[in-house]
Length: 261
Image (cartoon, rainbow, N blue to C red; front, top):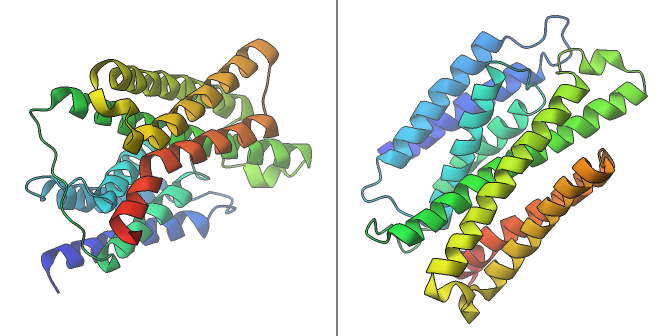
């Protein structure tokens, strides 16, 4: 068993322990032990980041990209949890990120795809794209949290939301995050259109179209909320649709090229 497998296995166990620490005490009168949860998660994050940084040069194949995105989301939401209650989001994120560590062990090897630092414009486009994707997935998770809290409040199940933040606070955070994510996605698309020659080429057309569709949907959600007062299930459905399109744009073709064809 090599160093990479050991590291991935340890990170997986720590992420799972953090998940269990939240889930098993989600409805406890005192709630989860935040010190224990964040300690376990922090060690897992350090190992996860260390494994990614140990690659020389940094590989840019599908497993690495997913790992990088999941790490970014995990770090961001963990930092949010230091100030706000995020008990509904953390187990979902930690569980997915932990399971991906195990999946990575068993995935067949693919051709390495190194990043070429000298291609500054392409690197900028990719960087903004990954950042926007991470932010918008976090916004989608917040949309789930808003829907859950709203549903429990309507059913007067106050115990289920006792250790969650107030509905209006989460909703306000959701649309702030969505605004930032949409803006970063727009910047990524503008860089692609203006500076990248192959952005509209046949082999990239599906990615471009799906990305633009998702950008349009995110923009419609923001317009609907601030102009028409949209919230609740309508926002959640549109968010899921937009995030699904963006996921297909960024990862769908790579999955087919690297593992199916």
